[in-house]
Amino acid sequence: MKDLTNTQYLLGKIKSFLNISWQDTETDVELTDFIFSSIRFLDETAGVELDYELTPQNEVKTTPADSLYNSMSYLGQDLLKNRIFYLREKALDDFSKNYQSDLVKLFNLGKIYKVNKNVEQ
Image 1 (cartoon, one colour):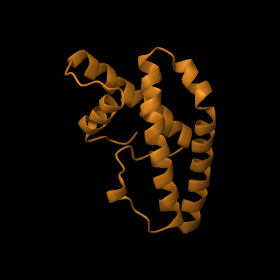
Image 2 (cartoon, helix red, strand yellow):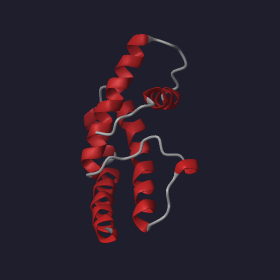
Image 3 (cartoon, helix red, strand yellow):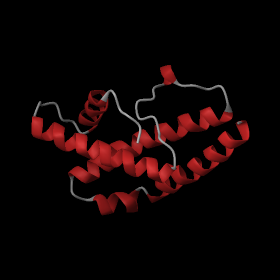
Image 4 (spheres, rainbow, N blue to C red):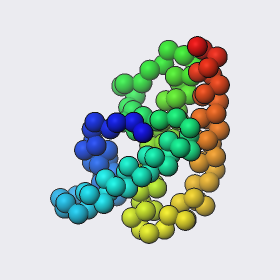
């Protein structure tokens, strides 16, 4: 799994998504655990390590594979936020059902990305 040097950035994004404006150590620890378990799940689904801190300002778009990777990372960011919402609500089984098409899309994009990346090398 990718070393996330800026966990606080992701924690802030997740708290904003969940409308959590208060500071609470227990909540932060729980959400951080959810972040790491969700990243592991999504990276395994994609078959590659996604960039959960990607913004339009730091995109790399030199090849078609890079553009595909950026698209996968944005999809991963959306799925990360929603998976954490479901984890927090103790409804993870509903996440898989409700986001099945997005998870399949992420899986397929990961396969295509690997092929494109191998062709480029």
